[in-house]
Image 1 (cartoon, rainbow, N blue to C red):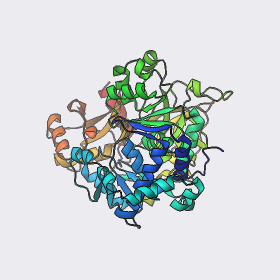
Image 2 (cartoon, one colour):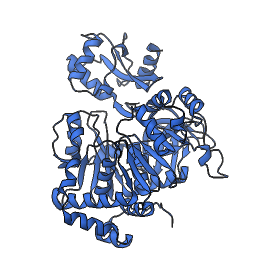
Image 3 (tube, rainbow, N blue to C red):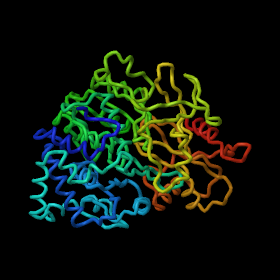
Image 4 (cartoon, rainbow, N blue to C red):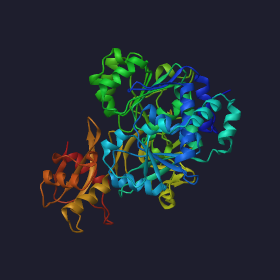
Length: 530
């Protein structure tokens, strides 16, 4: 029986994955936690019963989580799924205002977190907080007995007891928030089928087995972290090893060596740090390395391959695509006779079940191979829409195609090459940074009039992929003062340009219609920061 089908219901797949793993270690983290398949099932059942019995109302479908990649985060997500809840992993790097905006959009009344996390964040949530540390003492003997008995039931009976047979493929599994260009986050609604289709493609892509060990450093509020390092572990056969801080190269290297990590998925920013600080022996077991969320510089790929003997490969996707749409294939994971699996400079071919085409941005006409245009994507991985925002959904959907906002071309062999981004975002350190929100905050803190005095854009950066810069005419304050004002206004550090990222120009490019010439602004910025 195949593990993955396009119509797979993930909580049901989770039960089967736990049963297949049995006494084999399935989840571990840097705190020393180690869970077999049996442990994972038993504890998830116990937490699910506790949440349903005591803490959460029956009419509360959405539950927030503020937890880093960890065994506790894995258990909480699994428990919510088998309990029929929608897990909403909240981005703890955002401001309290934005986090609470996400909570409001979903109508979240409870957020699962830990005391350590909440003490570090120092925020007041517009929801009640449930602490993981309290769950153990809140479990009654009846809870433990119920969980132990149910963990031994035949899978088909357990599914019926939990109500999982009533879950439909189109039913929402999660909502993952992105940072919108206006500062209001958009909730991307992803169904059971969306995630299942993406994971089936991942398994077909690199042929995962129980011998694989995936490193989980991407946060679960990141779509790649949620799909590739959380649910791929929960629903398929690989083991997952988690660490809360992706910047901690020393601990990452130690975990890779200790657990024999074979699959490493990270952003180029994180990868650059690992390349500098991890010993060769620590990554000796790694044979698949994927870089996503930002452009992978060739010099980084060369340096990583030279040191560790495995070349990082690029992928392409978006939160709206669950997230994977295209990927290169590692040499040792290719299907025999499938042709070339990777092409330098590309983000790979569309994954199984996904179509990508380049179209003319104005007419929507499909362009011939080798011609750059707007990338449209279609497949079962395409989101259900933006939560409670049908107008925004309509702007990016065309007859089942997702309009990515990315410019690219597709060569004669089907490899996709990204040539630019038209949307007003930058991907820095794997996070989407909205230009318009930064502009609005600049206008506010500087008390500027309606005249076009500044514009935020980005230029290529060797370390982070992109760098936020401000092109402006005369401003009332110096860049150093402006940066302090932006921090005081509550912008995340990642969104604040450095003082040397300001450039004064005579005028800001505009089109004949009076609209901002984004392409002209980008070209001007690149010339200024060449």
